[in-house]
Length: 552
Image (cartoon, rainbow, N blue to C red; front, side):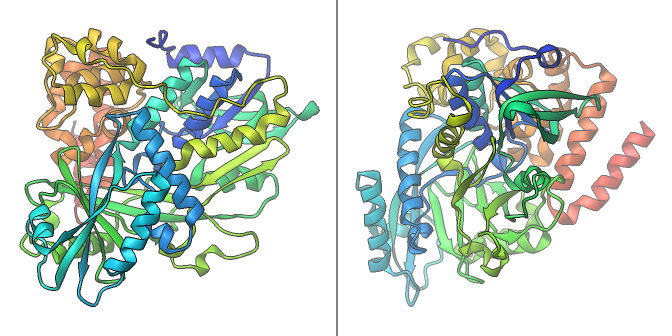
């Protein structure tokens, strides 16, 4: 069943302001955790509103390593429960959302005098397979490893272990969950910041909301408030007298052309500088190298950005493994940096541990109906939402929450026949089904012949951009180019070469004047240059933008 007509932002604001009845639940935070909670709560019949102060998936949930995995390193750290939980959620998501969460082969090379060796790694993989209830790993000898990853550094190479995890487009995952939440009755609103939460009589909470687009402030009330704001979780909790518990850690990635480092599966290796695990993997027709793991001391309200040291670290590791590639900064198409919330024990300084040793467990705290959920992994968002629902139960009597979290997505249907006439291959239809779920048939029927073409050497169709501006709450151009689609990450200079074509195809659909379009384009270019490009190119490019705007 396709979703009902999407309310406009103005219609949503009017509905919210006119409402006098308290909401059963207000979810604060539009990343994967908040989206998961909104979906489970609305599916259980609760009256739910989700508020996000920036754009959906603006924070960590569009800047992860895109991996839906159990995390072998958690096993090596003794985190058996977290690894088991993650592996089983990975299996669930691959079955429920094929095309959006896809299996990918990983290779871990064994080298002389390096730990873990084949025997130790085999123990981890056997446990991993037991958690997944299947055996999908094997040993490759030296020649097989070189054939699987041509150009791999050969001296000291003994062979490798090949195993399976999964890859996704993290922001599309968030958007699919939000679409299903709205289909179940939830109201979602981006660019709406929760500034304060006050306790009213009879346990109700009064929330002070700032509309970021108009600077208007209004209030709403709710029986429960879910603080699903990730690295920002301490902000609301400090209002209730709690001390800080979140340690923000930054992870950064670089994107290079696939022809410069062609990999068809993921290489996972220990970086020669510090023996941290790093990945090199294919994503959306490009090659991604990441991630770093550093304390992030910058104001989290500012978009994270890669540092020069991180760029060097990632390039050095890649060139160490593929010495013939000789990658340099000139090869980098784009970068991205995300900030993960790591939760420390009460009264203990979380920075006492090295970032790579910090635990990735999630927590759920209940402060009289203001419930904080933070930490955790992209893979385990359903488990986190389920625990939030259990914690909310005493405040939401008379609602059945028992089955709401048993699944994320309805079982997929076979839509291949429905794509007849589009000339799209089955693999592309599978990807679109993963991205749009129950909206796929409506998406296909709305396609224009010209919408079937891809944007400049990417796998993104013009029809996806058109759908996003009409149905996915695009407020700013960066919402469209960095999160609804990822063309800002996979095209040179953020897709600047397509500026005129983007304007011709999309401006009228957005309802923007030419002046508005120009303003949004300069905004997008500055965001891209400050936060998605190399540090060495930022300052002069920002000055160029200022000059262009002034001259124009």
